Amino acid sequence: MAWVYCATKKKRLHHHQHSINQYTLCQTFIVFIMSLPNVLARGDEFLGEYPRNSTLWRFFSYGTCVFTIGMSKLILKSLYNVKLDHMDRLDNAINRSQSENRGLLTIMNHMSVIDDPFIWGIFPWRIYKDLDSVRWCLGANNVCFQNKILATFFSLGQVLSTERFGVGPFQGSIDAAIRLLSPDDTLDLEWTPYSETPNKLVLPQKAGSLVKTIKEDYLPPIKRYKPSWMHVYPEGFVLQLHPPFSNSMRYFKWGVSRMILESTVAPIIVPIFTTGFEKIASEEAAGSTIKRYIPTNFGAEIKVTVGNTIEDNVIEKYREEWRQLVDKYYDPKNPVDLTQELKYGKEAQDLRSRLAAELRKYIAQIRHDECKFPEEDARFQSSAWWKSYTLTEGASDPDVKFIGKNWAIRRLQKFLTKQEENDRSSR
Image 1 (tube, rainbow, N blue to C red):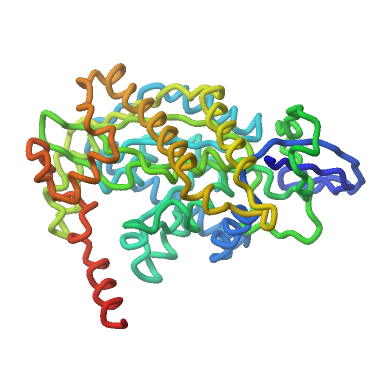
Image 2: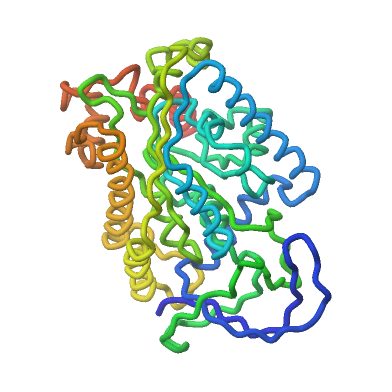
């Protein structure tokens, strides 16, 4: 039994920021979805940790984003040779996202600590029309949210605090990302088993006008007037390797798979491949707090290549598998949340792994076909290989050498060693 949205109640309508004359509408539609209510509720709760729906917050949030983008543009345009290929592909995806009322998900390789925000300094100003046009992204909790000042700054910059090192994909930031990629967050919905509804797919109301039905007692944790844009670095860590493995990628983690599988409507997905940011912020300077964030190699080429949007039928194949798993493993006693089997079962994990690998393939294709890099070493696609390499701190494959350090090694994370020491002392 999969789940569908079924709404047949009288509503008030709002169009963008302008309230339409109040009237009643009896509307019936069915939307096949894969996100369970408690997942969306946890996403709401996470987003609600800051007053994101207040006018004052939105004002300062947009100001923070514009200032950061502007500084990035100033540095890049003044000191580096910037090239942007196929911006039209991203423009088309943004337009589709709004006309089809679907979230936008961009995925990118992670070459340096300044990938974000510098990537946004490369795109033209015209795409940042308002706060809803600015991307959301994930940021490491131990880096971006070390104290209240940093936490507030990055939260204003639409960054979601994400924990690494064993916490996994079932955490608040991923639930929040799923919520953001689900454009129907103001619908007053009733939950009806898929088996009790006609076996027919009826898409949600056309969203060219972005008309939404409002639930009387529901206050969303964010105000938004168009679908959200989520930007993800699925590798989870920066990767810089010595030749002949330059500009390679790690395996992709499963959080991005959850975003795609569990959002109420499949997002529009655009792969992006970048080179050159590693020249601005080399990992060789990682041991120095000052040098690490001071730009170097002035005049170097920074190239951003936007790939073709991933076809909907490719993504729908995986979403259909997830739908079947929910049908197979839902808990009748608690049908509104993920079961242990849907979280950690072999079939669910295999599905997330295969989808993550599929996404990686599209970025690798840009790397090979459009940026003319040689084919990647086949080992780098394997999560098992990376786990072995990291656990042995490179001894398992000494031919692969990092520039700087492999930050996926637990021993190198001071916040983890302190935390583990505290855990041991409290036993």
